[in-house]
Image (cartoon, rainbow, N blue to C red; front, side, top):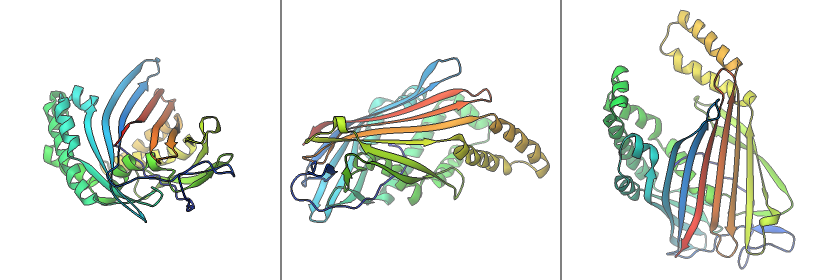
Length: 337
C-alpha cells in the first residue's frame, strides 16, 4: 500500500463489443465488468540496496492479496472496492517482531472505494476521510511497534521524541486529503492506467508528468514514454511498456534545497553559512539518476490486467556514497470470480 499519482487522460472512444485490436492497428482498453465481479491479485514488493563493495541487501519485502470487487455497474461507470488480505512486511515482522497474523488482521480492516467511467478509467476516490481515520490507526500501530524495539526507543529518547509527539508529527504530514489521495491512488491507478484510451500499436507516446517533491510547492516535471509491445500483443491481450528517466541536473537542486530547509530551523545565520558550504560540497560531488520501468498485460475480453511489473533504479555515485537501490513491484491475477 504505497505511492505516486500518475493518471494519464486520453481521448476515449465509444466501442461496441469487446475491447480489441482494431483493423487500423489500434487497441481500445475497455472494462467489461458486472456487479459482483472480483479480480484477485497476488502483490509483491522488494527493495534491494547494493553498496560500493558490490554487496546486495534486501532492505524490505512485502506481499499481500489485493481484491478488486465491482460494487455497482451502470451505463456511465463502475463503483469498485479494493480490499487487502494476507499482508506481510519483513521490516515490521523482523525488526519489530510483529506477527504475520496481526499484520494480516490490520490489512483486512482497510478498504478503498473508487469510481470509474464506463471504460474503467479511474475518476475519483470515494472514502478518503475513512482512509484518513484508518491511517491514523496504522500510524499508532507502527509507533507502538517501533517503541518496543530497544534501540529505536533509545534513539527516540536521546532526541527527546515521545510517542505522542511522533504521532502528531506523522499525522500532520500524512493525514490530509491531498497526501492520502496520493498514497491510496498508488494502489488503484497502476493496474488501470491505460483504461479509456485508444492507442496506435506502432506509435510511441510521450508526455510530461509532474512529480511532487519534498520541498513545499516544488514539482519536478519529467518526460515519460509509453508504447505497445508489438511482439507480445495479439487479438486476446495487449502489453504496454512505460519508461521514465531523471537526471542529476533535474533532481539534485531540489534535493539540496530540501537539505537546506532541514537545517535552517535549527541553526543561527552565522552557523548556517558554514553548514550550507558543507552541503554544497557534498552535492557537488554527487551524481544521482532515477530510471523507472513498468509493463502491464491486459485481457481484451474482460479488461482486467493479467499482470503488472514495475521497477525503479536509483544510482548514486560520488561523495563516498556509491550505491544502487532497486525497488520492484509485481501484481499477478490469481483468480476471477
